[in-house]
Length: 285
Length: 226
Image (cartoon, rainbow over all chains, first blue to last red; front, side, top):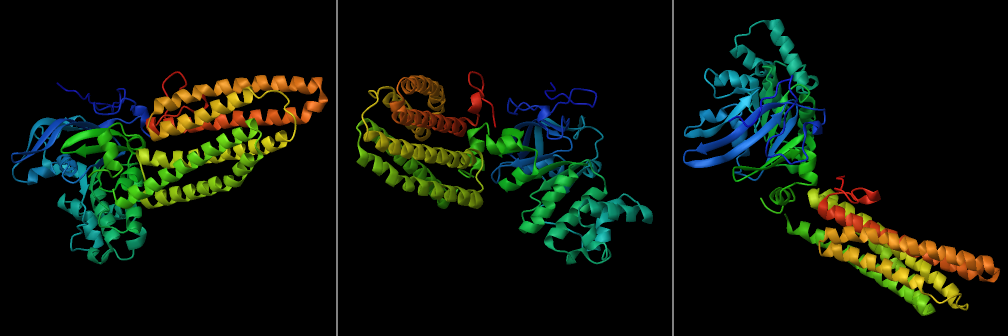
């Protein structure tokens, strides 16, 4: 049985997952009603015999930032990697039951190509991983893989993506220099530019600022704020203040279970679950 | 959570409770100074008020440092806001106790206008509201705090009756004006003290329930979140 109705623009918007607090409604969305783009429905995930995610159900709204928080080993990064099937690359992993739908379509459905899925669902990692190539080549890497060779299109994409990643002004005069000469914060923004160059719908970020200093962190956070106008963003973070500053919705996980999912303001001012409150106030974890 | 976090939180709690204890004591002394016509007690209240002022300043310093260093969230964050607001209300109550003590010294030098019945009753009601609000804070009892809010009306009513009665004294005999005015001001001070006790009770409710019952919000229905 499909417990999460797939929202379409014609329908009443639905972002009301079963685990949300009772006072949560689509109208809570800061930019007005939002529809859910990603629907996770009773997901059970295993690493070999060890169950990492237990019966996870939540709906992620479109063009909003959703943060996954929780102590180490709670399953938040595992869930994030499920969203673009990155876990397929790890031997022994399996989804025992449940579904993930993006825009209503099952991402494990017949005929879904994981590579195509990852074009739609880009990912930014904890440690920036620029290729040992020029800044320009890093940005166009995905397009070249797709066989795009039109120089004008590539040039336009480089400028658009670097502007989108708030990096253009800093690197426009050295696009053909090595990306490895950039600072840590610039490298991370370059990786974001590389991700948005292939025009995804969703950007997954796995602790994108954990290796950055406060200034670089602030720039990436400002960027996240701008990017949500165009993209749906899901971010895993250990930094409570970052989740508070950046996200519209927050999901708290513990021991592979979703404990609470609500508007970020609600989670950080008046969480519904004692376990959430204990975690965010630093009383455990 | 670091030991420093708990230690600093504990220091804020201690400072707040110390303020509450001194304020309660000064209010009690001010009322005794009036009822027992004791100038020495009145002077004690006036002299000790600065301690409460200093504690308010200390508490605000502790709160701002805690917020800057620990970035509290959820209940800890509400406690910072509430502690500062309760401290402000306590400081105002202590100032009003000083005002009562000063009136007591003025009145003590003159014959009684009438037996003091309503004013001690108001004083007892207001002091009880304050003590119960603080005990609701310490014992984490938001429902007890909410119940205190309703008691403010009884104090308001006595104040109105007393004002009418004292006005009639002044109309009948202008020689009573000074004493009647002093008693009117004491009555108003007590009415304000009850208001501050009510404010404290509302803050206690907010702390534990994260819901706002100020200005009649959520009075009989569900409280409003702020």
